[in-house]
Image (cartoon, rainbow, N blue to C red):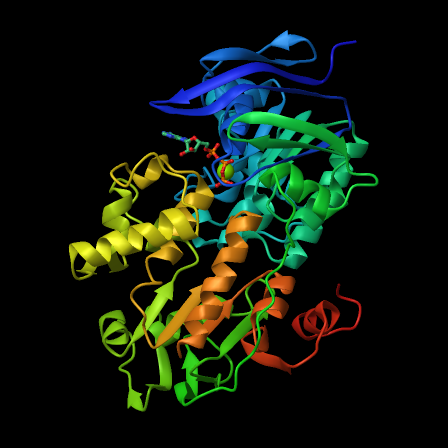
Amino acid sequence: MAPRLNVSGVVKRFGGTLALDGFGFSLEPGEVRGLIGENGSGKSTAMKVISGEIAPDEGSVTVDGVALPNLDPTARLTAGVGVVMQDPHLCLELTVAENLYLGRLQRRFRAINWKQVTADAQRVLDEAGIPIDARKKVVDLSQDERHMVEVARVLAFGCKVVGFDETTASLTEDHVAKLFSVMRTLKAQGASQVFISHRLPEVLEICDTVTVLRDGQLVGTIPTDGADEADLIEMMVGRSMDGWYVRTPLPPGEVVLETKGMVPDQFPAPVDLQVRAGEVVGIGGLVGSGRSSILEAIYGLERRSGDVVVAGVPVKAASPREAIRAGMGLVPEDRRIRGLAMEQTVRENATAVRTGSQPLRALNSKDVDAEILEVLFDKIRLKAASSEIAVSTLSGGNQQKIVIGRWLHHTPKLLLLDEPTRGIDIAAKKEIHQLIDELAKDGMALLVVSSELPELIGLCDRVIMMREGRVAGEFIGAFTEQDLMTAAAGSGDAA
Ligand SMILES: Nc1ncnc2c1ncn2[C@@H]1O[C@H](COP(=O)(O)OP(=O)(O)OP(=O)(O)O)[C@@H](O)[C@H]1O
Ligand SMILES: [Mg+2]
């Protein structure tokens, strides 16, 4: 019998970049296959070849022995191949229900029964345990919810080959658990799944087998049974290394950030924070607990009442310009919206500090530019053909490296980081943690939002857990993932 999914001999070039170099694998019904590799190793390209979004230069994709047409994602969906992409491909102005059935609706000539479509969509969402109203417009949903809508979309189509490209990177722990339960249901129904993630414990938990890519080539495939993180890391980077960077806390210095009676827009209570020079303070919590809003209120992207004081000087509300002048920097959560000008070059993006989509001010000189690019290329190992290409052509993780890397030379007094290592591979993540540590040693104050509990524990001196817009707990010294989850969920059995 032909395998459920068979990918063979795939070659894909982008200009001078060989993204996939003779890549292939096959999946049995019910198999969950992990696909891992460093940033730029070709994972998303492989996924796009499977989904029909891009046509390979050579090679083929078959499902149940039948070759699929290239460059037609809708035909693939109808044939039962659905992929949740790294960057959601939803129509923002349409409702959740409309997005779920997009592609299928276009094929019908009779009048559409919207009531029925909405009811069907709601049933798919409810059955998957995804608490979203199908009548809502996608533009009004959070990033997490948008990813869950993409997940619901492959369910609505009853796909038998399903791919997830770093879906968990944009989800907090409770949504990851939901996604895994959806994946287990799909597995029981016999669907074959491809799961891309930089979080190796997840890969080991949910996958039966793992395929490793390096520079567009297949390194090998192993069963997860009996494998550990060290095995996977060695296959990925070609050498052994420890997974996490552990920092050495310093005696904290002067207070750099103080919020007094600060109430971000729509918060039920004030959030009073202090961050000192040399301190790395973490903020954790579930979706909707207000983590990002705190950073945005401090930085002036969101409205707030109360006081924000930086190095003794009060900062006006709702003015990122003033925030930068006061010595703040922000690495935003959504690199596409607030982080990068996608059609501009690596150099242009790396050397300008932006708010919104406007370049706010370019950094000083050619020398500084050269140094920033050196940090990017050498230290955090940016994989880009040159500094003169558009950032839209970089892999997701490499885009994120620019968003964070450009601040490392700007040395604000206070750096606000929202999910700084999302989508970043394990080797570069360790470098970024080390760089954050060095910034703290140089006297910077850092406030970091992260959904990854090991990151909060390993990187931060102190962690504040949020729940529904309130501070639910503060942790210093020795604490566990369980402690943090309990505070986030408000019960003992959350993890
Ligand atoms: N549209 C494109 N134009 C030019 N180059 C591209 C394009 N898409 C991908 N590439 C290049 O192909 C290579 C593989 O990229 P891909 O996105 O598949 O990596 P990835 O393994 O998914 O990485 P990440 O973990 O960062 O998401 C990279 O060098 C990338 O810059
Ligand atoms: Mg990718």
